[in-house]
Length: 178
Image (tube, rainbow, N blue to C red):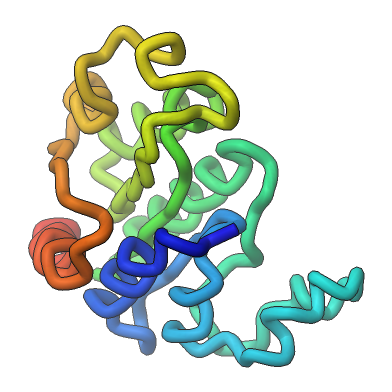
């Protein structure tokens, strides 16, 4: 399911420090999971129906991938807020599709992250379809990135097929989040 979206996943993870930053994927971030340290064997166990595919090894700063739309976003924000409360400068990046940006599981945690200044980067992969709904029927916002403004953090547009552009935007976002 991640074919054609590798630059988003890999570019965002390249900007993270795997010894302190957290990666919270949705189901399309297999390439980013591997780059962040998840083993190839474990990464594909879930395809075979094994619950071991969802087990994250001790010390790997990653949550299990989430297939439910927007289900990982509240966890990512809770993790980021907890890191901030502990006085750490770790950063959390959470991936989701634009359909998730119309769910309460996006708006409520995004608003909370904006209010608390939690070190969370919201990475929305916009392919102009929310599952089977075209973007104009899913949101009235001219761009998905503009939804960030209402939550109190910047929204940036980047060509998700350009690995280096994704990396540069993420590198800057990680620096701001610290």
